[in-house]
Image (cartoon, rainbow, N blue to C red):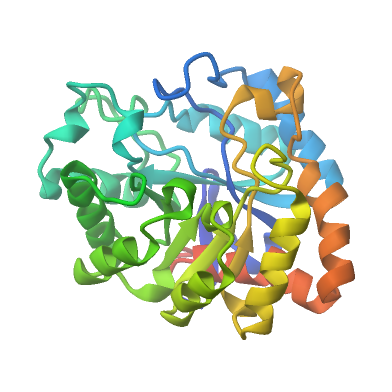
Length: 318
């Protein structure tokens, strides 16, 4: 484990205190790529997180990156009210989430990297770096988000991923990369490794949207973590597909390379906004089925130990 603490929005937290980790979710988000699906209401977010806490979730990794409506002060408030550990993200998404003319499209790698490092080491920018002169929030990011397009990495995405790799190498923070429908996995890993990232600091999100267990085993064999998050997304496939996939990947010897999240990145997915499945779904609906498949020890490894190890940062408790 790279470190014994994670960096939460309220300060360092020992990994032993994290409990069950929702390894990828969204509490505040506003993307032009998802019009009408923004989440901005603090009271509703508190209600959603409390519902998740009552189901047994101890930690939420909030993966809204720069440019998609991060709210560091609001995240601090939610963490303080609910008692749930919240780990926030720096980094950047794929091109589709940034309008034409947004500064991220033309920013050089060095500027992109330096802004991620500032978020991680000094404090998160309160307005997504649109006004660099504003003072930083006291909440630091504790993870890095990346993104790639469908079966390809665009030149702009490649610059951002290079910056992300450099920021991870400089800070030890874990990287979680959006793969569009589970594609371009090896290409993303190749680029990050070539740019200085360590394989044990790389996780790929959404690979379960492409439930090819042999591909997943290949990626895991490179030392990369797989983060599955289509749980409760029946529009993609039933949960049995994810359960089968987990069972096959574990059977291939990669139990230590699996994490689970919900990725509720739209208001329609949150019970506090009248939608679903909501934060409670992970432990109330999916986890009991997973325990029947794998047993308690393996399930706890996936829900507790693996994400604690992945998001831990060396020196974070100093």
